[in-house]
Image (cartoon, each protein chain N blue to C red):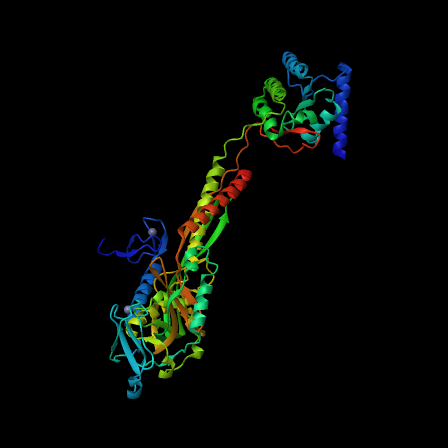
Length: 258
Length: 367
Ligand SMILES: [Zn+2]
Ligand SMILES: [Zn+2]
């Protein structure tokens, strides 16, 4: 509850500060002061081009801190409360510098454009490496460019971009191997069922079970063999890979660290 | 140096191991295993002892002379013998029974011969199942055999059926067995960035005694050993002292494997049983492997000569004879049926297709 309050206060503060400057909040809000004046102009121009081309809101927000709030929740709030006036949908790229986290949130409409993890990664895999280098302007320009591409794809095909599925060679080969294994095991059992002629291996049936008496036992230690198998290293996820912890019915997108 | 060093083989990999007398430890140059010299010496001493025990066991003979009896004059006169002119099988029956055709090769020319050279059995297990029951049991045996050619059941008739007493040697023995096992125990430790498995190996010696009663080994060369072992077991509680009266209407095979030859098979089976029995006492390890054949010494042992009842049924399919046997006491039928190759192919194809479809579905969704 306390977290929610903090978020609401922060969002309100953002609203107020924006409202004093313009009637509608500008699409670039650099609260963390990461951009120079000329960079700001460039990014803003590029965002605006995309917004006008598709009648959407394509926003960037940088924050020095959002307290303990989760970037995903905060970004969703921005979509709900601030950047909610795009006729064809809204998308925001949030960067939180003290947590070194980013998050891309979309509303329901753009969820169909930026589809799932692959859609979000299409943007983040290109943009986040710039954040790592400290080139924020580069990151936001790339973000705008990628949103442009996704929107263009959506308008052309009537559905969001999705990576082409590779031909499932592994599944085909695996299925064939399983097929051969099962068929040969089945053949063995079928053939075995046709004959019950088989020699006995032991005389267990004729052993007087009560007669066994262990007279002597002697165990000697011989030697020890030690083998060491290195554990597989925990794979580092690539720059811009996405976790969708905060996506819900009304929001799309995802985020991660940089 | 070469003169004074003692050579053994590495207990782990079998590579030659050289060390000076008086040293305490040796490391195998090939696999890096560290061994206590005392352990290696003890191990080889034990191996030698085991080999000596096995040799002694080999030389220990069964008392086979006691098996069987001499026929009394009267009894011998009631018995007849026939020899097959084609395959040479020797068949014995009582005076009122005729051996009209050879039950092994189907040859109808059976030459009467002098009844001699056969021990009188100690025991006999009388026939309990009739000829009709044998035919019905064979029909039942065909049921639920998916690969059986349709033609086999459609125009199948039993070509020949013969009740036959088969000579068996029954071995009793109290044995004292010695087994050597290699056992191991593993411990897995997670060191953070690796998984260390440390496996300790042990040599486990076991010695124990046990008693076997009436292990059957058929005494007929003509009778397939695999068939005879497949119709086991017989219920010995119904075994009675031999009398010629039980022979009426049945044929008997004259034994041609003597007790001394049959005992080898009994020994094999005893060996396996003893090995398994002793292995069960090697506890507290993750794996147990027998190291060499279990050696056993026979104490009190005995051999009996008995006749057991077997129905032999012969059918013909595509000019090939198929022989089935039924335990004349318990009704257990054994045999090998012909396989319809096209049925086999179809079923395998079906199994293959179904598996591929299901496996593809599963793999596609998880990969
Ligand atoms: Zn070695
Ligand atoms: Zn014959």
